[in-house]
Image 1 (tube, helix red, strand yellow):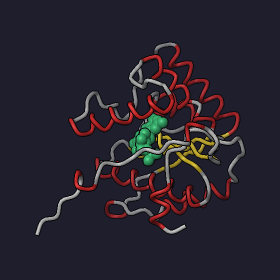
Image 2: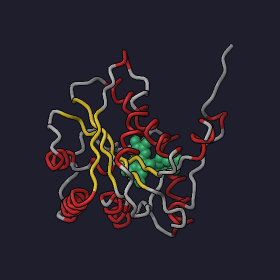
Image 3: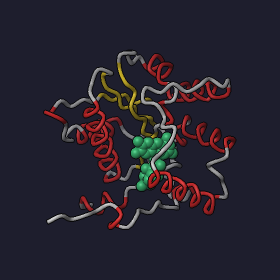
Image 4: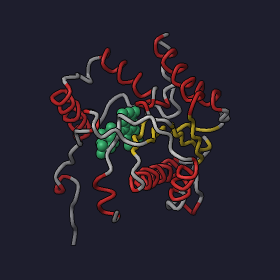
Length: 220
Ligand SMILES: Cc1cc2nc3c(=O)[nH]c(=O)nc-3n(C[C@H](O)[C@H](O)[C@H](O)COP(=O)(O)O)c2cc1C
């Protein structure tokens, strides 16, 4: 697959087949992602992949914390509000999902269900966690974002599906303790990975993008 096709056909996958991904393939994807650029080649990324019974136990713990009403304490706080254009794009996304699936993502009960699906890694056989030292500057967050995209593109090229997930970092302290990641690390992002179930309705709609003139200007 050429790079442009890979970028344009990647989509967030929210339903997976049960089949495990061979460890060699997972290693290869992370190896590819490690070629991402970073500020002064600092490579401020660390990766934990959780699978099998351990992943099931982690999902159960996260669902239980949610059921108990434990307030989320992610290392990167969830935004409380968004500037106008971004708020409008979120509204559009919510509206599109409502039309396609009849689910209202602004309803707290629906949000709770969506969080549970996230905590279960949407049925994927593996959950990836990206983390880095808390002492690292804002630039390092930028770098780990580049790493995440490279990882998702490499996975896509290999016929795998991924979805980046801020939600699975909700209970950062408990998750890090569970996975043996030191508290001195910042849990940045979760990514479910596995073979996509392209028959599932969740994977049948694609998000759109704003017209180019909303984001691009030339100056000469
Ligand atoms: C930093 C980040 C956090 C995200 N968190 C979640 C999440 O918690 N759960 C989820 O289902 N999707 C999550 N997404 C996926 C976005 O909703 C998705 O990328 C966006 O709607 C565009 O759709 P596409 O990935 O199919 O192109 C996240 C994406 C990013 C980049």
